[in-house]
Length: 355
Image (cartoon, rainbow, N blue to C red; front, top):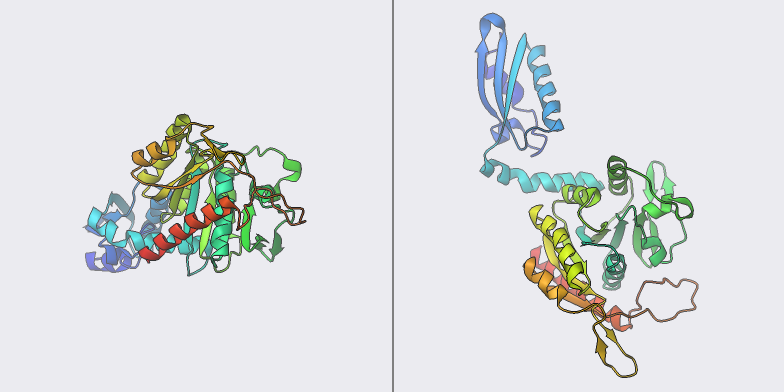
């Protein structure tokens, strides 16, 4: 019959599925008891998170190990490890998860762009922030994670589809920005009639099966609100920063606060609030009209304990007859192009501070 020391040695190399450390490192084998006459082994195991599918897999692994080495029956109890042990290894585990996510060792800065409701210009902000970061010399990618309301390809004037190399998808590149979107896989702008689990799988594919290469920033255009996809992103990328986009209208700011609160609850740092369509300025008189009201962005920032880092007026990009015209990209010398340049510069400075 197995001795307590032998059981300990057998279980020491087993990995905690959440902390990516061995049970020896975490002190995960909390207690062992043996009934020699019945060849029964009881083990209490501490892990990073209990009552999950991963716990079930770990249970099967431990039972298999002990039975192969002489135990007739095995009893297992799981408990959560102490907070100090979890905190010690949590950041390393999250970094490892994200490394697995993109399959590269150098991780980009992940920035999620979210809003409480549709129609506030979230995707426009994503596209133009990506362009400004690229103009500042950064390598940038966009995941159009707004799977029901994808619009990034149209906004950037993209007509090509991704190429497939072996089992890897090559993202479409436009103006130096690499892009993946559900829009590439839908014919004739058809509606997407999928349920949550299927959408989650597609989102995973955008991370794991796409050859992103060496990126400095990966922007995620999230669906509005706090639905399945937004929650999946929060789970997949624990280190993501978040921008909240709203109009100055109080109702838009009110619902945007929910998206911000979800970011806070999932420990995503909020980079700031961008107030889009903040005002309209007459070319003739220079007078500003607050078409959608005023003050919503400031109030939202106060609720989320952050700052308004951009107030963007209602303006169109310059008219351009060029074949490569993209309808939602502001030119570098456009007043809004300059505003996005400032926002991108602020974000880069903040990221460099944290390195």
